[in-house]
Amino acid sequence: MGITILLWGYFLFGYLFILFFLFIPCYVRLKSSDAVLQKLFHIHLKCFFSLVEFLAPGIKFMIPEDVRRLRSSIIVCNHISYLDPILLVSLFPRQTTIVKNTFFSVPIFSWFLRKAGYVPSAPSEMYGPAMINHLEGIKRHLAAGGNLFVFPEGTRSHSGKLAPFNKGVFSIARYCNTGLKLVFIRHTNKLFRPGTFSFQTCEKNTIALELIASLTPDYSADQFSISTVADQAKLIFERKIAEDRRREDAGS
Amino acid sequence: MTRQDIEKEVRAIFLREFEVENPEPDVNLREAYGFDSIDAIELLLEIEKFLGSELTQAEKKKAMDIRTLNQIIDYIERLAEKRQATAETK
Image 1: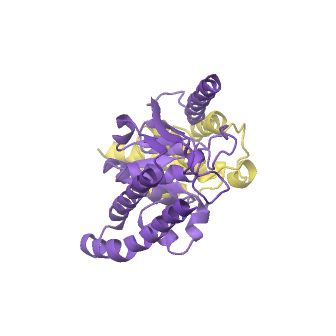
Image 2: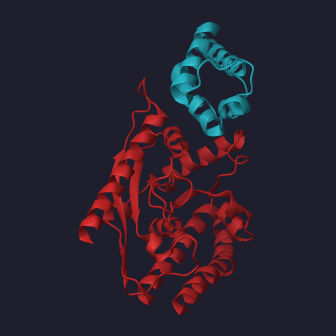
């Protein structure tokens, strides 16, 4: 319990510290809020996961170099815990994502999210000309070396099975004329289980990320179809989950 | 490129990309077929492919307010005319 309180304390007060002591001075100096905030979030969450490792020696992180080195990429991930997005932010200095609309109704935090250039998933924000503005912003972000990470299931999986994929991210990739990197996330749900507030720091656990495929669709092909790319990505994730399950069953 | 050619192509796109067969020309696509803004982006990219040229940001923004199949056809017709006029003046 003590570790959970420490981690939550660091996590929440870290954001307040960033706002008052780092962001405002940086913003006044650099006038560019998104890059500054993304970098500050990155540093804050990197420290958060270092603190997790320090306080809970049984928790290990296995992040291979090919994942750490991803830049200017659209990253597609499975979603098993609230820790997934913050783990990805801790890995990439420039990052954006599409955030559930409920987070944009949280005071202060929503202001942060907007200033950091994160894209709300609300229909009102993703409709009409605003949609084009967001897409052009993502294009510029990718060109500047940033990553966009997206969870096409839209919500966390409680069962371990994949939910149907929303094809939005695949359309965004086509709009930006960019390929897709499929990154598989393991065991974040063992550290922070859906439906709980406490961190499971007493159990031994290795949180791992793995680049399982790079898709480079031919967007100019006559018979190109977004649904086909979305189905292909989902199939790759499903195979990975089945493979993992077989391995875990064999090990137990 | 005639209006019939454009209509044929748009209907083909709807069938291939959105699995909508023969959409009614004047119904609101959002209400009738659940056509959302991500679908609109897809449609824009298909229009670019069909016209063989990229759309400007202003042209794209204009497209985001389109609601019916007939409006899509009008929109493409205007773009095609504009591009033809530009090509002729060159």
